Image (cartoon, protein in one colour):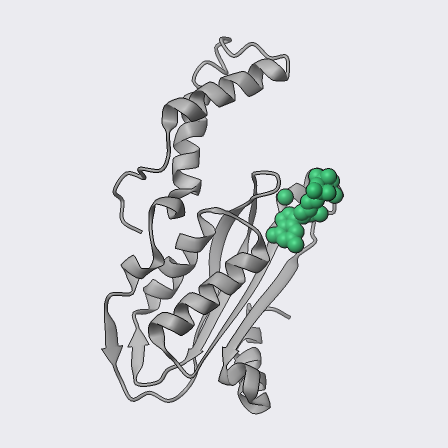
Length: 197
Ligand SMILES: Nc1nc2c(ncn2[C@@H]2O[C@H](COP(=O)(O)OP(=O)(O)OP(=O)(O)O)[C@@H](O)[C@H]2O)c(=O)[nH]1
Ligand SMILES: [Zn+2]
């Protein structure tokens, strides 16, 4: 993602809202430890919602022509996102695979595309689908598979309070839907060391 400032983030509004929340919980927003918290939170939101000011296509302008006809997998892409229900983080690993059709993409761009969708208010299912659909459309490969495993802090530290629980989501596209052998192959590559069990 480009380092350019995110124009969708209004720091002043976030600061005023955070001050209001501090008052609403009965805190003194002017005490030493909290005095700069509204500004910190605004800077944090700029970072964790940086995907709102950007498009994943910013990372996929360059494709390389290559006659490679086997599955490519980028496994264990660490990520963090924000649950849109509670504005609390969820984090884990994404695994992205595709079967090229004449074009490949720089490896890092897979991670950058995923991050661009992750750095928005999200639910894990939509994040998974958006990454798969975008790569399918932009790369025009024979197939795409995205598997995401994540722990949701809104479920581990509050609410149901189930630390250690992981949500696993997947989105298969193209040949990975239609062809059982390709599907088994991609899932076993994703399941390799460090992948989903
Ligand atoms: N499917 C899905 N659910 C999510 C995700 N992130 C958070 N949730 C769930 O969203 C739900 C929101 O449910 P609500 O009943 O509206 O909220 P709540 O009263 O705070 O629910 P509890 O978390 O059960 O206390 C909860 O069950 C969360 O666990 C996600 O990425 N995908
Ligand atoms: Zn949540």
